[in-house]
Length: 173
Image 1 (cartoon, one colour):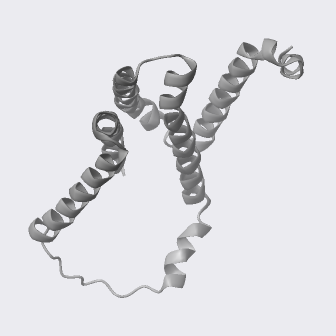
Image 2 (tube, helix red, strand yellow):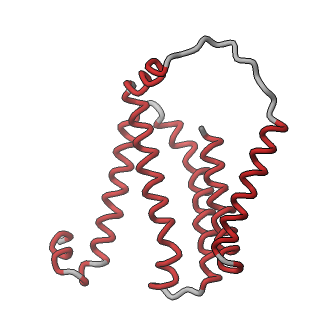
């Protein structure tokens, strides 16, 4: 699982800024064609270089496989992953329009901004290893930390925009 998330991190550090640069320089459709070509090359490389492995295990029914979802720890882990990545990708999707239309950054600065955000992902991934090992046995602590962080960020956002909307200002006071 760690390697999979390392791949997601690298995709955000390298792939998204590269795709943004290609899209800004040559048009958005060129980015899609480049991703499609890389996907075909990846399929070909997997077919050529990943050895076939004989399966000695007995067949497991779909019902037995779905039974894993009765485990509350598994469901909690999946929910944390879903909400975490959904929140991040929502944020990530708005970086370009907000930085260009609201902040006024030029198009070529967005690529550097995406690289900076990706570098922050790598740094955060490296820094989280030790705390996760320490808190591994206490899932409630991790959930509590995540909820507390989200509340603090929401309160900060509301406070910053309180002057724009009187109703929001009353929520913060």
